[in-house]
Length: 352
Image (tube, rainbow, N blue to C red):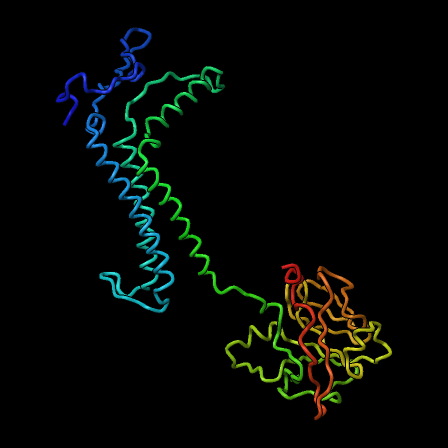
């Protein structure tokens, strides 16, 4: 149905500024302004039943978007990550990825399609010609912009079309939930496992090279020995994760040369056990100078004094190396008397 089929009195009144004036060609302006074609009203402008149908279509699209977002969440929680399905002609694909992609795509598409259909069928489509003006806005221009904004808000019928408004707000509120659910794909939360290691009371210290438990007589004065927890084997699935936190440096110092009181109490006959993981960025420390009792991290040259609580004497490391309290068991083997008192590795874990 076109506007020519509607009686004149039923047509909406045109705004005075709806069409630009038609120009006339002359010597100064050889190209005449053709003006705008006559405005033709849409069926929704003249038939409220058609407008209601368009309103229901827009509301349906927004509702489908909400349902698709719910489907996205359900698929993320319910579809197994290892399940695959055959899709012609692609082949076998991940069922979860396919479900997430389809539901999120439908949710976003329906919001866009609803907004476009709303603008094309229910919002005002009158073309307005306006003269160009200087970049600097005058008070009159600002007042006109505010008036145009209010007029546009009124013509959008957002206040009157409550069904569209409510379903649009619902769809826009639901879609961000997809992004929230995707945060779960970053992996399990670390919890407190980064603050603890395998070391526990009664666990023996095992030489990393010989894979044998250490006795005090195995550690000579001035030597550097690397140790791991008893029971941790290289073929274990979690070996790399655990050794990255539990690796030890074992050094024997004459008790009279130990300056830190707590270090002396936590040692056994001058044998001290410190974390091998540098407190700067987590590099393994491997360089020991027996005369000064200093250890050096090869990555950024952080230097620690093992005779004085492993405090930092040079470099970017944030704090001293954590010490493991040790003793001997009934069979004479070196054992841990608990876990580290503070997190090992980079200092930011302490502030986390």
